[in-house]
Amino acid sequence: MKVLAVRPLADSAVTFDLDDRPGARAAACVHAAVAAIRAAARAGALDEGIEPVAAFASVTVHYDPLRTAQSELVATVLARLRDARPETRAAGRLWRLPCCYDGPHGADLEDLSARLGLTRAAIVEAHERCDFNVFAIGFLPGLPFMGELPDALSLPRRDSPRQRVPAGAVAIAKGLCVIYPGASPGGWHIVGHCPVPLFDAARPSPALLAPGDRVAFARVSEARHVEIAAALDAGEWPRRLPRPTGRAMSALVVLDPGARTLVQDLGFRGGRDRGVPRSGVLDRDGLYLLNRLLGNPPGTAALEIAVTSPRFRVEDGPVRIACGAGLSGHLRRGAERIALPEWGAATLHEGDELFLDPPARGGTGLLAIEGGLDVAPIFGSRSTLLACAIGGLDGRPLRRGDRLKVTPPRDAGKAAWRLPVPPAAPAPIRVVPGPQTEWFTDAAMQAFLGAAWQVTPALDRMGMRLAGPLLAHDAARGADIVSDGAVPGAIQVPAEGRPIVLLADAQTTGGYPKIATVISADLSRVARSVPGDTIEFRAVSVAEAEAAARAHARALQTLAQAAEETPATLSEALYRSNLVSGGVDARHPDHFPGHLGAGEKGRR
Image 1 (cartoon, rainbow, N blue to C red):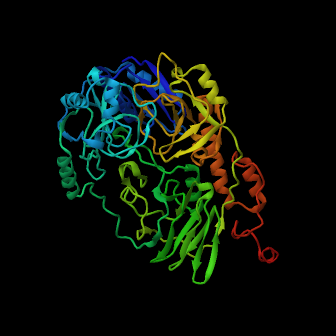
Image 2 (tube, rainbow, N blue to C red):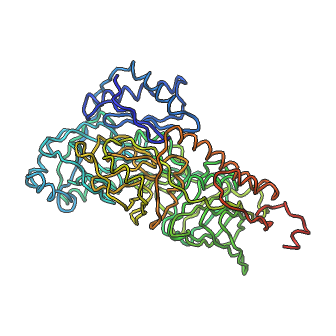
Image 3 (tube, rainbow, N blue to C red):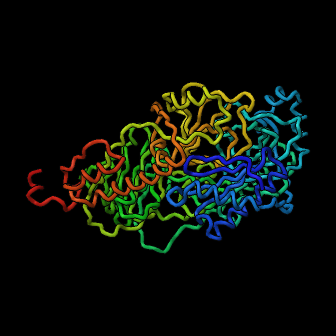
């Protein structure tokens, strides 16, 4: 099998281009490549944690730079693919799915009519006549990429993607058709709506459709569309995953949920081939440090708080918590008011009420709990993915009245104390150019690396739009690519020329060219940005990115261990880490419990 190009996405993944256009030939190559890569992992030739993800004409292999060198991964994959032979999938199932093209469901039909020179009725008729093949599942959990549309309906994606496409939207672009399984941003043209849910995490096979399946749409009226949707709702779809039970647990009762409080950990594992993104916490560094502060395993789930903060009451026993960067508050214990600083850990007792201030600068903050939260995992994670309502608490933010069950602390009498984490010094965000640098002019690349970009209010868990100079695409290539793999940190540039940095909930595949990819060591810094912040980028190589990942992991470990060191050695330990740019105030004994004697405490 021939590989047309190898495209790194910094030190997070690498894409192997196998064809230059989607179709049956490309699908056969992709199917064989994924099988060969998985076989190599089973045989021990590749790390078992790698994750190959199929797109239309390429395969993206996600890997951990702390476990695998990209150069070795590429060499092994190329050797395996050299001997692989394209495999045509067996014919899948035929699905006839209802689609309503009427009124607002066909949001872009009038615009398409003007652009294509066809009547609205002619567009609907041509779409309904298609017998689609499912080429790939990606972008969102269960989202099918289906082909092929007739030439009369072929046109590029929208110049600027919508910030929200409704769940069930049927949309077209680039000769293909998709159905959005959940609400999300999207750049395709909406022609109709399908009320049938495409993804149910409670099913043994969560995605309704699979590569190789065939789909035909049956036109239904608005009235029939409402009937079908009501019948599905009566069936209580999606089914809820069972709650863990059987352990004696304390509880945090939600008195006020805040604007958007989500259960998050390090993200889903093994679901990208079904369109399930990694998701998880935005600030992975912060989660690591808070869990070390509480003695939790590194990936223990916490609460990610955005804009305004929740309020809790403790019931059924004690709870030990820790506040991350930019998050502080207080607890009320009867008439007593006890301050809770950022990077501080404290034990709450039954009857205490926890009041948290809004996260600093209008961003996000983390509240970690010793022992974690007792919610059911899916895809190896307790994270929440709002776009498709999966994970966490039934795929939604906290609500008033929720009872969050938590494991009681190992030592309920443990003192309040802090991990002194100084703010990181301002520095450019490091990126590896590509994977589609040839889609941009030289002037665009220079502008990208030379500008001071401003974070705009168009910011959510999927990505952030940046304001600055418009980045021009190469005239011969345009602003579209055959959709390929995407990762958090990839910087895609739609036709309008304004870059979008993908974040934790980034889609698994995407069709806009990506000018660069943020290295893994700098992802948490990017995720902590808020509207109005300025970001500058600096280009590095893949080898430099992997070295930075190793150095960053060592620095985090040093910082986490600092709380266990004596005040005399703490400053030296922090200065050894790359995260510190100034001195540390070590005067307060609650920073370092047990390190100051009674005499010192009396002179404080």
